[in-house]
Image (cartoon, rainbow, N blue to C red; front, side, top):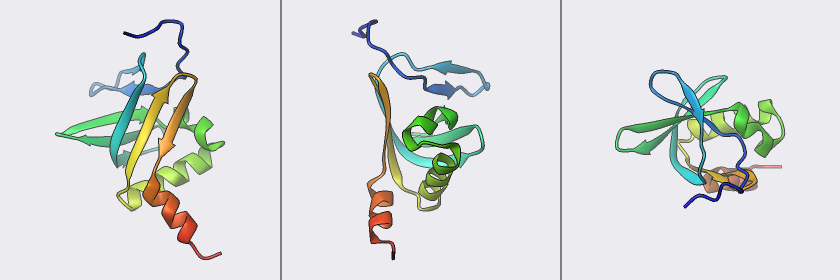
Length: 107
């Protein structure tokens, strides 16, 4: 049961007709990025399901729009399995493969 007193950050998702709404419950999306434009990122979650979420709603994780778009583009390029979580008071992004590439990158 969802506690109405729990604050969730804004995370918009778009349906097939182009209408968007806000998630109202904590969740984790797990999948590969299959679509990316200036407004939406499409995450393929399996079984022909693609969830489109707002790029702008992910900006607070990374600090600015350019960094957000760059990291999402890198994840798409490498077909990384990503996790986007909506939790009370924060949105999370986890991409172990991407983190390892950054650790291994020449300095």
